[in-house]
Length: 329
Ligand code: AMP
Ligand code: MG
Image (cartoon, rainbow, N blue to C red; front, side, top):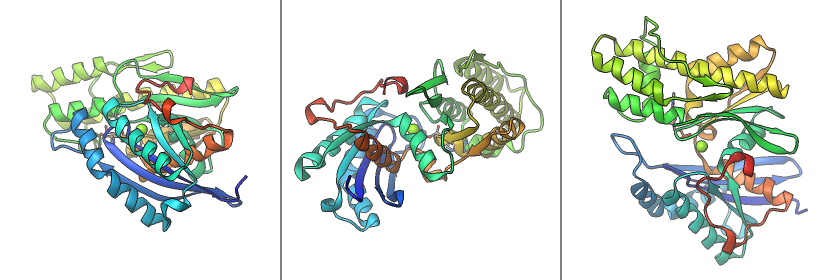
């Protein structure tokens, strides 16, 4: 094994184009750069073709900035990795094309990685978590994942939309803009009254579609303060998430909970997870914000781990996998 391996990783599953650089050697893994470029619109929502156009426009700048931040050149890079899926086809295609080009032009091995698993592995690298259950809560994804008996497994997941999308859609509905999650969090602090909402946990799975319809109707009726609705929405859906995470901890016998995804930036969700972990003697780990949201560093780090396991993605077999499931990786 080479004493020091350097991997450049490209993330482009949705609205973020990220380029990260990770390295490993005798002293373990380290992140050398994590450049994040986000496509946003004032109203929110994501038009796939526009996001992809943003990624094409920004791609060379992001790569150049990442190399500069790591103080290396492409010559120093040993591996090129990219998010192969799951995600939005238009967006994934840009990252894959950029990665293939770097790989072919500079004769570096290519490694396609699973985006959801990278959230778990970056958390293990950057926190003291050794074998955690990951509560992965982002715009499009909501999953409870852990590594058990030789593979990554999904213990629970949303049956419809991701929790972040649900928050964003409600925020847009009540005219507080995008991204919705942080704005709902701010309004919720002024909530005084808990308003009953559907609580939808099925086994270890959750569903948000019905809650969204219900709370939109409540808002439209004019009978409720929006602060109370935001407060109640957070309390309800976060309780659902904490419940499924706790079941996964109990089921697997693991004693570490790791958070990942943009919604994990929410301090109320963190607080509820901490209380649950304390009650059952488990530990909670929350990476810093730049590693919670979609980022290239986690793709670079998983690229190294996969490379060391022997994974090589041939360019002719590097097609994107928009529906790639965590338990098929
Ligand atoms: P990601 O898809 O992982 O990049 O995360 C984006 C999602 O995280 C969006 O749906 C945001 O509304 C959500 N988000 C970001 N910050 C917060 C927060 N403080 N509370 C709740 N959701 C958040
Ligand atoms: Mg993500």
